[in-house]
Length: 40
Image (cartoon, rainbow, N blue to C red; front, side, top):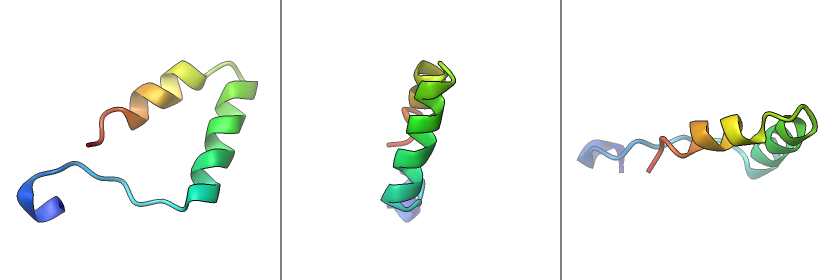
């Protein structure tokens, strides 16, 4: 995917879920989702 120009992010699913839960608790979920939305 990277070789053909897609923006990707590699992370473990459990790590992603933990970060999103922490963002939700600190009322930063929209910002965290916007960051993820930059990737294809």
